[in-house]
Length: 277
Image 1 (cartoon, one colour):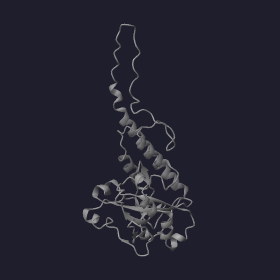
Image 2: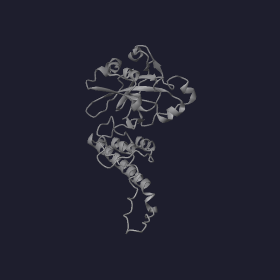
Image 3: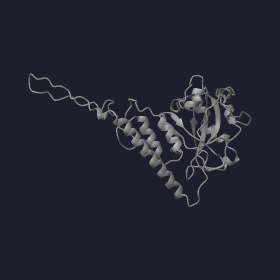
Image 4: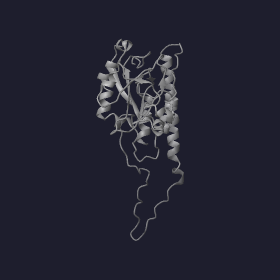
C-alpha cells in the first residue's frame, strides 16, 4: 500500500480528536490527495506505528526454476487478471475507512448522552479569488494592535480580528486537510497568529514548513500563551500549537500565508467559544 494511504487510514482511526479525521468530507479530501501510483510502499501492520518497507516491485514473479541441462525455460506470461487488483484493493480499503470512520463518529456521539450535539460547520477552507489574494492575507481581517505575533522579528506576524476555529487536523505526508468550525460550538483548534510564508521557506508542506526557525518562533508556545484572551487564560488545560499552511487549492490560487493554531488538551479534546483575538 502507498505510505500516504497507510498514514491517512491511521489518522482516520486515531483516538485523539485533535489528530483524527473530522468528518467524511475530510476523509474524501485526504483520499484525493493520496498518490496511489507512488513507489513508496509499506507492508501490512498496525497503523500508524512503525511499518516494514517492502520492495516497490513486490508483485514481480520469481524467476523460473531451471530445467534439465540443454533446455530453455520460458517465463510464464503475466496474469492479466492481476492488473486491476490494486485499484480494487484501494477502493475496498477506502470504503472500509469510511465505514469505520462513520462508526467511530456514531459511537462517540452516543457516548456523550442522548442529546443530539450541535454540528459545527465542516466546510473546507474556501479557495480565494485573485482579488482576495491581493488583500494580503486572503481577505482575512488582521491587526498588529495588542498582537504578540507582531513582536516576532522577521515574521511579519499579525492577529486575526475575527476568531477562526477549526476541526481536527489531518496530516498526510505534510499535506494538511482541515475544516472551518463555528467557534460557538465545540471545535479543536483556533488561530492565534497569521503571517506570510518566509521567502526562504515558501512551501505548503507542513512538515517542511514547521522546520523553519521563523515559523517556529511565531507559532511558539510563548507567543500563543501571550495571545490568549481572558477566556483563554481561564482554560487550565495544557495548550499545544501547530501550523496550517496554505491548502493545495489556496496554493494554486497564489495565497502564500500560514496560520499558527492552538489546541487545549481538554478531557474530550474539544473546546467552545473563542480564546484568542
